[in-house]
Amino acid sequence: MKTILRGINNEVTIDTKGPVIIIGECINPTRRKKLVSTLQEGKFEYVLELAESQIKAGADVLDVNVGFPGVNDVKLLPAAVLAIRGSFDIPLCLDSPNPKAIEAALKVAGGKCLINSVNGEEKSLNALLSIAKEYEAAIIGLTMDDDGITHDPEKRLAIGEKILERAVKAGIKEEDVIIDPLAMAVSADSEACIVTLETIRLVHQKLGLNITMGASNVSFGLPGREDLNSAFISLAIMNGLTCPIANPEKITAAVRAADLVLGRDDFAVRFVEYFQSRM
Amino acid sequence: MNYFGREFEKYRFSIIVKSQIPNLKNRIMNEILNKIAQCVEFGKINKTSPYPPNMKDQDGADELTKRALEVGVRPDEILDDALIPAMANVGNKFSKKEIYVPQMLMSAKAMNSAMAHLKPFFQSGETKRKGKFIIGTVSGDLHDIGKNLVAMMIEGGGWEVIDLGVDAGAEKFLKALDEHPGAIVGLSALLTTTMENMKKIVSAIKEKYSTSKILVGGAPVTKEYCEKIGADFYSPDPQGAVNYLKQLAS
View 1 (cartoon, each protein chain N blue to C red):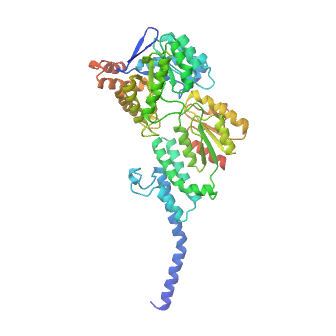
View 2 (tube, rainbow over the protein chains, first blue to last red):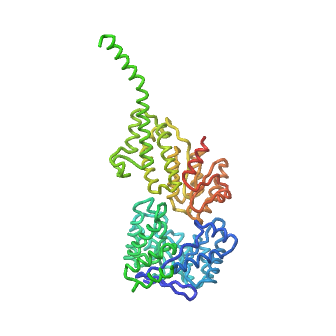
View 3 (tube, each protein chain N blue to C red):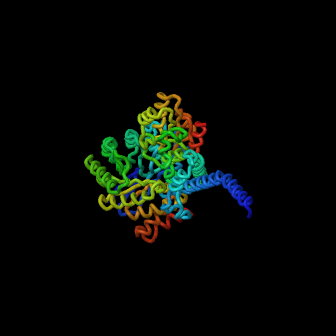
């Protein structure tokens, strides 16, 4: 199955057969105080800096999150989107818990965006599916619902199925639903990663949809975070992960390596190219 | 040895024994408290637990605490002289990045296995804790690791912890304060987008209980933000929260 996202002219295809597409996570104020202070001043230079460095490091799509306390994101999210649009032709992943901010950003973004995110809660489905349909956006469906987060992969699959069903009913194309199996910190729960890996396998096999996840969460609270993230992402890709949200500076090497190992990179073109571009 | 000699020996022996009994008892007690502290610091829950590998087949915090009570160590001594200092070591090592989340969780489990033996004394009122602490992750946020770490460190600091779980709104905190008047409150948030709900909860609490103390923490939270929303204390790590509470209680 193929999910197609667009910037202005630049089209990115996320294919369940791979290769893996990287959604850059860095335009996000959590743990980036400089982003908060520059956004508060209404300045977007730093946003553009983050966009450029991520694209150079291998990002195919950029996640845009401008949430911080006191923000009017109905104004700020579209403003940030326009700033990025002015300099880069890359598909965007609009990241906000506020449906109004998502809608305002979709109005100005053009192309074909990804909405981050919908989940199985009634409130979320009701607020966002019609917006996604109206602006022909793709959606990320988080496998949690009104009961919170389950640790049973079958139940996470069922929530994914429900989101898919509701989306299709709302007029969204099946291929425009991307599932997030939820990646949680393995430091607090030894089973956390295996639950996610199993959910990925189930979603891939039973729903055949593209799959994303926040790929840096798993290593919270541990040393050797990059090594752990790399190991996890490789296994996740093997099971069906196709478009992780991560820091491309830290994850692209592992992603290119996994694609090569899985026979998706003839003559190691992309793998070698990545390392050549870093020299 | 003549009669006098034998009597003298008996007398001498009784003096030695009598004078050494308290010392011996103290020594045994101290030794057992040290062992409990060690088990908590290094996460040895009980004899069957395989962690840590170098303490395999040794008694854990569970067995040792039970034995300590049997030989007459007071519950408050176990709390003050074993659990609290051990957890303080754990918290300090975590702050210095000498240990990581899994080690901290093992320590907390060992501490809980010791605490389980102390619970009856807390319930009967025979042993007093330092105070009550209400904690929760704020509404809209489901991240619980940070909140749990702080909760267990504060419990390890000798406090009774009322854990409201995740996605807790102002109403939940107010209800908990109604039930536990004077409790100190801790708010956790991991997302910049949910951090805003901290402000609402702080305002709601301060409006009804103006003297209550509120701690805030979590990845996006800063000292400046803490001051801006009218909370009382920010700590970048769990031990900071424990130290603040200690200061409040003294």
